[in-house]
Image (tube, rainbow, N blue to C red; front, side, top):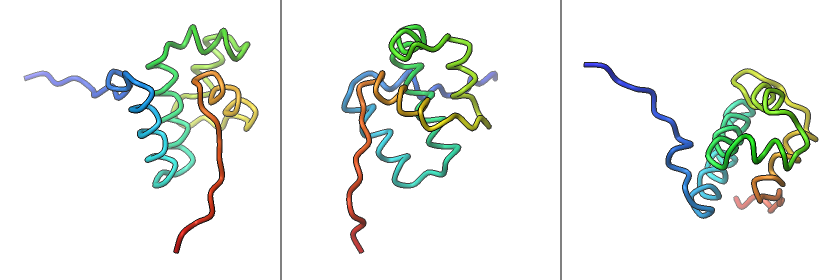
Amino acid sequence: METSKLEIADYLDSNEMIVEYLNSVLERGNDAEIITAIGNIAKAIGMTKIAEKTGMSRPSLYKALSEGSKPQFSTIMKVLKAVGGQMQINPLTT
């Protein structure tokens, strides 16, 4: 029996799902997982659309959000804005 790789981007079909997914990864994930999550969100929305909104080329966007990449903070901010997100800092609760 052949299996296929789960593509999380296929399940990110609403703003609520995207927000929940990204917040969950931000809360528990490491740098690499956060970059991967942002890449999954960009794929779900459409890399061409995100590339146009960020002013980046599609190949550059794929490279910046690929596994093992170390994108600049400005790139992350551009992509977050393009996917309709923003960063917000809240105090940690103990």
